[in-house]
Image (cartoon, rainbow, N blue to C red):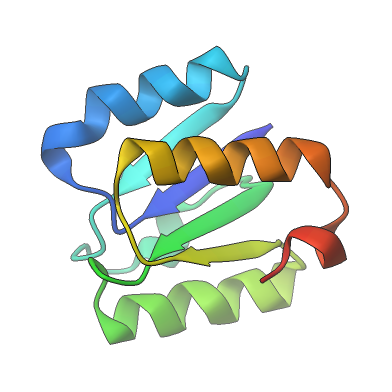
Length: 102
């Protein structure tokens, strides 16, 4: 499973990747300030957007991309590692797109 975290903090990159690897998930992290994130998303199965750390334009761009491709999206306010773990755990419990799309 490939997950993309948008709005993560640069200083927590290693912890994010470690938390994802514990669950057998490949993770890409973007801080939300990049240009043209859509081109870099690749084959994501699930998107997590940290609303406290991402720009409005990046959020809109990614959300439009996810809707076009049918990729489930989860919005969280916190950019902490524990929030990522909770999202990954919930996604594993309810892998159906409709159940995880909040």
